[in-house]
Image (tube, rainbow, N blue to C red; front, side, top):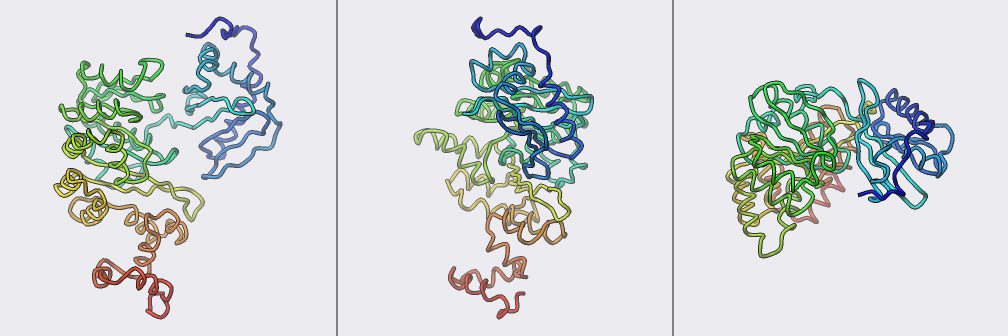
Length: 398
């Protein structure tokens, strides 16, 4: 609970600093930016096309930003003083909302605004691989969307939930921190709960969820062992569960889940995960030749081989299973997805190599070594492959 000394008299606020920040938010929206950074003793900066750029204007003093935080948070200012950081959603206008994190740092207070589109994009609008839609048709199990912060995980989940909402008659329950995309009841009934406002934690909301007759549960993030355990249990008891992790690819996602548990528990968790995992969608945003960004997706699809590898602790073979399953199961590795983007003229060769899982393997494929060529040199040593890469002109590969 907030102490009395932290209570804020809203009537004494002029909202002058918040009005200034709103002008910068408007400017960022006009320039197609994604994030606005407000920092004590600094100018306002925005992320536009993936790069942080300064906006010309005044420096916001330590006192200015503290006042701004009071104007933004109002009745939650006392909670901010206690916790030193706080999440919220800020409605800017009829077309734009922002996910906001306000936090203390060594120079004072900072805030980051991340834009949230009001309209929910469809899987078709986003030009995602068709296999993404198949995850919306699952009846039970666990589907994970992973990637670094800002890679578009929330957008992908929103598109999948929207697909279910348009095509099925289910009860969808979401647990988010905070709620980003707001879904309206269409074919489905959707209850969206915000951690901190509607529930105390992901884990407490998940415990309650199993008594709320859901068909589909979206967990904004699996942050701890208890939440992971509950998500696995929910998937095992006939629910379709979607969630996210901050992992870079499918193999690391599986490793992260297993390693969260003690050694004595890991065999049980492996069996449980192998039994319920329907898919992993891992994402990387890559700068394009036209100055925008596009998403590359690694997509693991549940197959008997993948299930076997998880159960038998053969995670190192999962990438190979993903690549070999492309034709029949529509799975794909990052390098396969990135090669497609390069071949389609969307991204440059340098960008493709920068974001590839294996830049050297990708360059071999770019230079004409197809899977047939690769199999013919499968027994070549690493040193010989390195020699070939350095002497492409000799081998006729340029």
